[in-house]
Image (tube, rainbow, N blue to C red; front, top):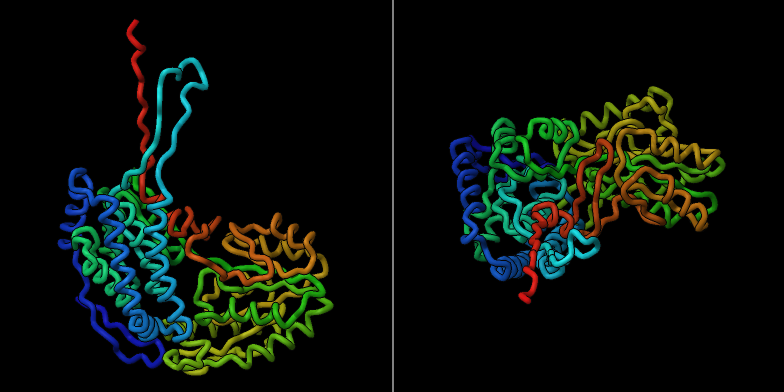
Amino acid sequence: MKTIVHNPFDREPVAEVPLIDWPQIDEWLNEAQLLHRDRHGWLAVHERVAILRRAADIMRERAEDLALQIVREGGKPLVDARVEAGRAINSVDLCVQALSDGGGHEIPMDLTEAGAGRTAYTFREPIGPVVAISAFNHPLNLIVHQVGPAVAAGCPVLIKPALETPLSCQSFVSILHEAGLPEAWCRFAPCGNDIAERMVTDPRTEFFSFIGSAKIGWMLRSKLAPGTRIALEHGGAAPVIVDSGVERAAVIASLLKGGFYHSGQVCVSVQRVYVPAAELKDFAHDVRRAAEKLVVGDPADAETQCGPLIRTEEVDRVERWVDEAIAAGGTLVCGGSRLSDTLFSPTVIVDPPDSAKVSQEEIFGPVICVYGYDDIDLAIEQANALPYAFQAAVFSDRLSIANHCIQSLAGSAVMVNDHTAFRVDWMPFAGLRRSGLGVGGIPYTMADMSIEKMAVWNWPAAAS
């Protein structure tokens, strides 16, 4: 069995990758479990540091090749693929930094008479075998966010990439091995969904890291073996509150970047924008003028800003959702149509009904919805109404309004005068409600993949 990787833009085959069957996965899980149980065989911290530093150096030498690979398999525009390759290199560096910054701490014991005479401290140990399943939209940096912390924490890891985009994952795993990581500590495991489910739910899996759809993530969580720890990163329908009177050009430029970056195929992509009703007409006009200037086309072209969707079926789905919203009363401002079997035009819809899919579900395509409001608290209530919560945003020149939105919006992070898709790789990144479980970000993932172990010393009383 094998998977054929296609270029999302022209659907031409790029590569073939053999799929791993269960007997091989079973063997690798046994191997990973034995590696973890053999404490004398654990990789020392200085060994892990050296491996990760060499891996980052190799990636720096091959940064352009890694970026072009992201373009070919994932359809991300070249300008953004280069940014992703740079972020992935920085993420490996962050794993080393987190090892330097991490560690345990002393627990005070003599706060009561019962603890007197004792000394306690904590230190960190690897949690055990990690199984990770990743998504297609950041085919290199997401892999680094799952595999890098596992290697840094000292955990053996099996990584299943999205089958649409396995090549960046394969490259990163190969780079780790080239940098000196023994192969048994990191296995590239592309496989079918049935094999992946067996791997995830196997009792030898101590930690499961998942980036992908909420439907699949929550389903797999329900089937985990007792004791398996987990981190889930899903998506949302990110809301933005725009206050009255803000400088419109800067706001719109930021919203278009946050909404149409990678053609909206981002878990915190700008989706629902709430604008004062008195300004809605002019706001929509200015958004249309800016959106129509976006360059849509071949992601290998350095001028392209919006590339293809990952599958032709996704173009069909986005088209259905947009048509439904317009038929139900939404006003199409721009876009709204496919440009080819793989491209969909950047689309803006004003006031689609609350019942429309574009108002209820994550679009994961190049579509922004704009709603008028008369009462900012009602806009916040509408923004919070969905069963998803991830990153949100507010644009305002007034401290009181910005702070009110920070306090009131139901998200794990609120961006002020920035779009919802902003992220740096060392910050916490957490989906709430159906949007996920746990906290991502390099140091936070490393903490999840390790155990804080405590030693308590009971010192004998001095001899009289």
